Image (cartoon, rainbow, N blue to C red; front, top):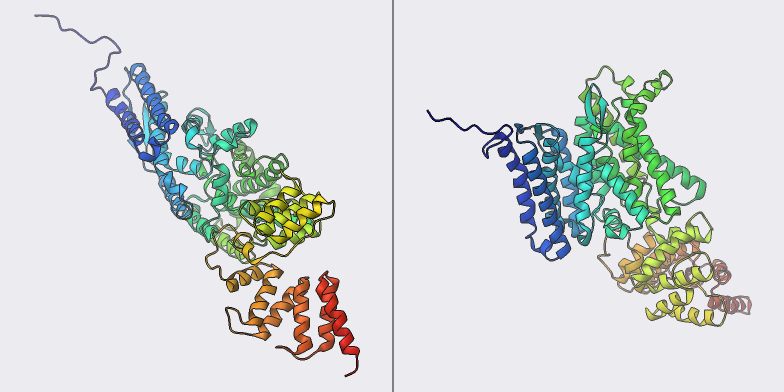
Length: 606
């Protein structure tokens, strides 16, 4: 009987469990490679080769693993965890709404799909390189979605995006500790790589490689975005008990903003108490229950520390000239490292009076979560009513910062300089002229000179800019000038896109509503003259009175003549003369002449 040839020890046939299991990461790698053929990806050679390069690296990893695990039976189990697919659904809702108002989000869908395919393949291979079983589920979805809510690399540098994803999953697999009697990952797998790469970008001064700034600013574009984020966060808060983390982070940041305003008279974050990107981070970045404290008071402390850290980092980054959007990305890994210490701190007897769980010990966990959500809902509604969060905030409006600069309040002039520089670039002659005056008065420090700003204002048809260019050339101080109707489409914007209705009546009305006294004066003129609206002297007088009380000389003059001639208001020559005098005192030269002439007529023979 012939001898039977036996396979060598360690050999593995193509149909072994090892080979069959490895087809899964190979399949995901194939999806990744196929995505390189999407037209938007093929259009950028570096992006195209980044996708193919990532695919090649995964195939090489799979090949090495195939050889090194030939004597092992690799397997996987399918475990769809609610924590993962619910969070992914919440994040997807944010993408859908945000992308409707900023098209690049929708354009990035193939790249997000590529990262998902890469994440599944890499996570499988890395896990099987260390143990035999991989848990298949929706885990990569919230990691990729969360990462892309805060940082994308531009197409020419997109290979770094794949590297960032790999760092996140490697940290989850390799950096672990004992927690609650089992081995668990220390860091939030999306916030860790975001923090690491943020530090690298800051140290190398290469933020321009990413869309980080654009992401942080455009997330405010959709109307009622704070309400959406609040609603999107509720399911996870109810199911996973992270309400106290979010609420304490939001409230602590809001309180610090109120303290800053009370001390300085200006807003810390310029146009909000809590920037929308920070508010997003408080709902969908640092709230991973797996890397959060276990105790309820610990979660409150965790949230407070996040709010305080963001507040402090914003100050440091701004003073260092570093883009401030990093403030929400940097602190999370340090907080993840501190959760054991936070839980020990929360168990101190002296702090038990602050433990929210002591008021709900008779409630089951889900009931307690609902109670926390009810409290958070009340807080959110109250903050919305007080403009603590929402689309409307005084810091969005130029008149607030113009007044703050005139009063020499903290950051008043520097913020006004930032705003006018942006609006000057967008085509507002008034903004160019205002920036030139600020530069000439040495109240701001910006690239360029006052003369260049005045020249730009003149090019845009702003007559005062032309006059100031001559004044500066001859050594005379420049003069401010009122905003013009043509400037309103630029200077009235508040981050929600272009102004839809641009008739004089609508523009003057919106300007007046935002605190531009020139708008109230212009609105009064339209009602007085019946331009674009039925003539209404009474309404005109009310608008002139509002602008006059706001210190606008021309409005005082207009209202003075109305009282002097009883046009829409009761005859009151004394008040009319007083208003002309006030207009003169405010610097309106014509009002001085009219006051003298009218006074002489009033005191002469009748």
